Length: 392
Image (cartoon, rainbow, N blue to C red; front, side, top):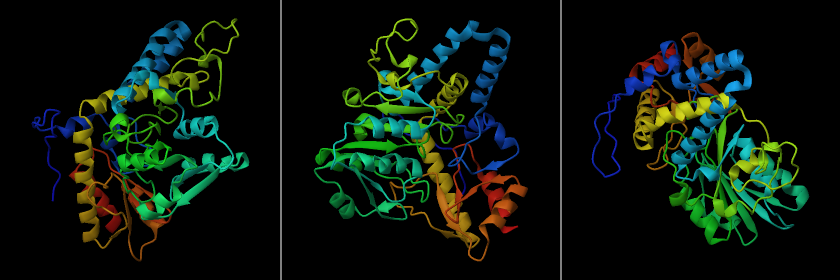
């Protein structure tokens, strides 16, 4: 099987022209040297993000804060791009330094009562466990439902969500298994029981379609340094507008209030939108760079990007199997992602990583197993280099 140009479905159901994936690859400087399969950890910057951030450095060094309003406007463009990406309104988007920051806003700001509980999955990334577990001193129980390589037993999940469940929180894609959850199904279960849904979207947002209205998402967070091809420390937080006043405004600072530029006016009148959670100074170059990457990805669209990464990971699985690898990721239709976990029987993971790095192939090891996570710009040559390095 080889990776071929695709024509993703258009919004009207017709077929678009074949996509030139090489054009996307040309916007990824990393591809000149590396076969990069580690987007699930930290992605390389896209060319547009690199150029914008370099422009900010040069401009700020030469002009100080005299051009600050221009860069503030670019940051607001990122808010707009983030809203378009997930089908939200700009006023529902907060700009955050991390996924953890978005999770903490909800965990610390929700009006908990003793006896309430949160339901999550046992194999969630630590950032989607510790903020909830830390609520124990407020009388809130965190229920961690076990999974089978990421897939949850729906009966066990249903048993865990009861009348005192206030939030169900789940990763869109599991970092440790590559399983992609059916967010709409989680939303339906949560809402039927009177709970709200929080989605840790960092391992999918950028290459898979998210529509917070259609999927029924109440809260969402994702840093931009994985599939959105942005820098670390620049991410998105979504809160449905009907929940804005449900959460206590945590991390309050000068930038949380409606009169944020009037520093001599001390009145705690928080902004009527999600920017109330931003608190203080934002990572302006990082957020501007993230916005540039989001614009680049928007040229291709989530339908094409997701089809491309699934096709790529399908081929990776086939090629890995041919050299004796055991694929640990469950690949059922509708649950495939751009993460594949595998083992090489009889081979030491650290030695494999070293061999790959020596051949300029980037991947990683999670929980003692190998993990590859390609993006849409990866091509057949990259896969060949991966297989050759693993066989070396």
